[in-house]
Image 1 (cartoon, rainbow over the protein chains, first blue to last red):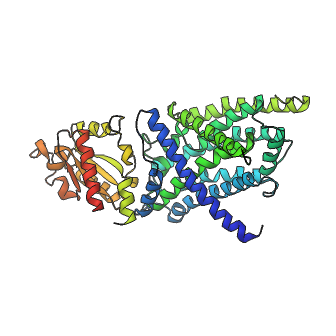
Image 2: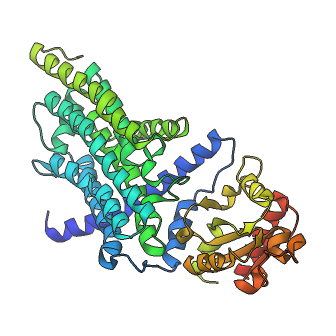
Image 3: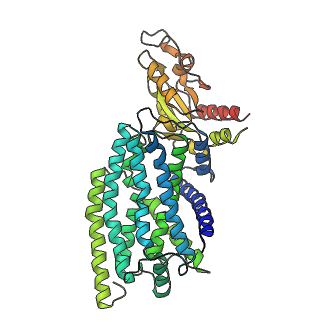
Length: 316
Length: 141
């Protein structure tokens, strides 16, 4: 593919991810409302929110570091756009596109939105935002360990394939990795890490509305806030999709497409239901949870995967 | 009507500003609007924590001498375009605290611009929703 086609594809895929991601946040809000016996917002609500924020005044606090404050939302958006580009290319064309090691690139880029939030929060010179940023930092440290271990499980099962396209085609021909004990445990770990990566309720201490009044985002208004909201919406589509690629064999083609969409919707419903049935964890509890229970599950999954590989048992 | 105003009427995020000397009953009634019975999220209204995200300030209670500069400062911190709604008798007209020794000599609507008044002691959630609908309707005209 020449470079021009890639650039056009990048913009089309990013815009598509943004639109679908915003619709996904609507599904989240609507399901939340129905769980609470409310009617919930209309379908265009996230779009109206973003358009409205684009039309509002952008205020930069007097004490803030101006460049860092305004650039950090763009860093997050760039990170999540690149991730969605790589993942969607691998899903649409598992054999032809991608490069060896794009899995590693995705792992690195997926941390960018969290880093951008930390950067922006610290740049805004607000004490509550600083508290939020420090919590986000601890949370990132906490969930990255089990997240990497989950990916190690996938790598053991795939025999060291480091490209997303390779993982998808291996699963489409040889059965999905989640159809085994270690794969199932890895899926549990992946869902919990998704919850934390999206900043959803048990792990939303970084922007706790009731104690930190928005935390990291407290000083953001207008366009930068809209960019942060858009980044969050795109993560809503991208992070569960990454799990679908790693463990559930991607979307597929032909009759596989509805099934593939169903896999994504299943993960999303799990995330929304966890969010609606749990209280917010204090940050030290969240760290303890990820480094304790979740890492233990991930290590058991790694051990089972190694055992299954050595003994040649598929279901382990 | 511009897209900017149209989008604002479809997703007004409200910031709850208790001006100080109030019995908190208006504040409780504001929270009632978010309950399943009234559910103002149907209209895109969300209660947010930071004034930087606000599209409308819901001011309740009497402005006292102590809080008057703070109310003014919060209005200045809100990104424009921003609306101000005076909720309840105290915020609308100083109510029963008019001659109180702690009351600010200047009422709320002379301190900052007020776009809508929702009278009542406290106003019922239905009244507040009617006020919001009338205010948003006046914007789109």
